[in-house]
Image 1 (cartoon, rainbow, N blue to C red):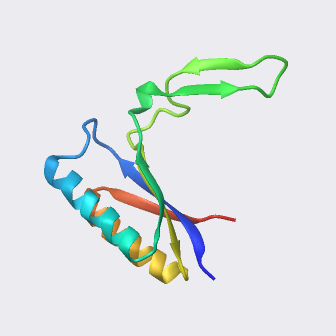
Image 2 (tube, rainbow, N blue to C red):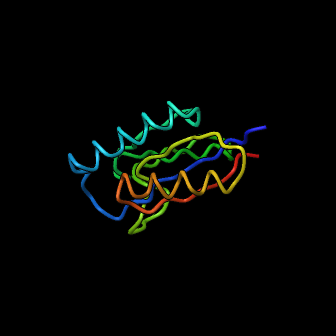
Amino acid sequence: MNVHYLVSVIDDQSSSGTPDEMAAIDAFNERLQAEGHWVFAGGLAAPSAATVIDNRGGEALFTDGPFLESKEYLAGFWIITAPDLDVALKLAAEGSKACNRKVEVRPFL
């Protein structure tokens, strides 16, 4: 039985991927699809485009900007399926190389 994993792309740059990085990401995505590991993927806008919503109290509070100020941020992600963590880590390492960024792997519960 396969498990779903979130592969988060961690960026410390303010610019999006170069044309070479984008081509490598496209090739990696095509391989994930061809091998049956693909579930979903996407890139995210810069943290400055974020809105934080806190509706734990009596009224929702909307705040512009990221939840945390950090030099690193979530720039995109893949949701993949793999038979085990070893395969997921191998795929994530290939994704890291393709996008030229650090990635974090976490299984879904």
